[in-house]
Image (cartoon, protein in one colour):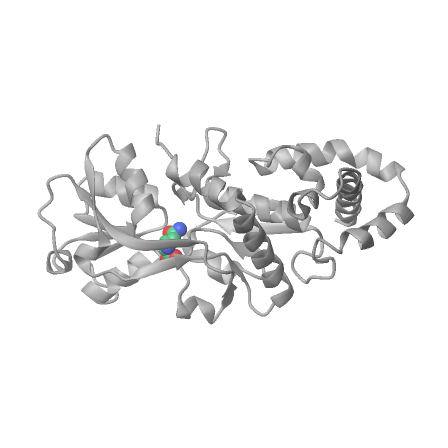
Length: 316
Ligand code: GLN
C-alpha cells in the first residue's frame, strides 16, 4: 500500500503543475488521484487497470520529488496520510447493490449507480482510490471501521445508527413508499397492518413494518436482497413492500407494468435523508468528505450526477 501513496503524491504533483501552468483552474478537479486519468472510473476494475499501468514508472522515479510535491499539494487536498482508515490511500466503501438507481449491478457484474459515482468523485477529490464492496445491507453499519471505511447505500440518517457511526452531511431527501401489485386493495395504514409485508432486513422500511405488526410478527417477511423482496411480491407471496420511493419506482419500471408505487404520504410515513456513513469519531475523514461534497455542490458536479444517475435512470 506504500506504493499507492507515492502514486497519489506524484499524480497530485503532476496535477498541481498542470494547474499552475494553466493559471489556476478550479482546485477541486485538479487535485485528483492517479485513477482519475481514466474519466471518472466507473468501476474499481477500470481504476485498477490504470494504476497497474502507472506503477512501473513510479517505481523508477525519485522519492524526494514525491515527498516535496505532496506537501505542496496538501494545501488544496486534505492530508489523510495518517488517517486510521484511509491512510493507505484506499477508501473501501460498502454498499448493497439492489437499490437502483443509487446502486445496482451493471452489465459487467460491477456495482454502479449514483452512490458509486458519488464516492468515486469524492475519492478522486481526496486523492483516494475507491474500492466498492457489495454486501448485505444489514451488515453495513456494523462493518464500518473494520471491514469497510464507509457505507454509501442510500442510507437514512437515524439516531440508532448514529450510536455506531458518523454521518456525512445529507445528500438526498427521501421517503418510504409502498410497492404493491397493480390493482391491489391496499390503500391505508390499516390495510398494511393486515397485509403480508416484504422488507429488506435492517432498513428503515423494516422498522416501519415492525411498528405496524410488532417485532417478529409473521406478517413481516424479511429478506437480504430487494431483488428477492420484489420477486416474492410479484409471485404473490407477499401483499406489499415497504421501501424507499425512488428505488420502488425503479423496480416498478422494471416490472412490465405489474406493480404500482403508492406514496408514503398516504400511509403517514416520515421524510428521511440519505448520507454517507463513516467510522465514528474520525472528524478528519468526516470533514474531508463533507468538504468534497460541498465543493461538488458548489461547482455543479453534484447536480450533474443527480441528473445522470437519478433523473435519467431508465431500466432495461
Ligand atoms: N434508506 C433505507 C435505510 O437506510 C434503505 C436503504 C437500502 O436498503 N439501501 O434503511
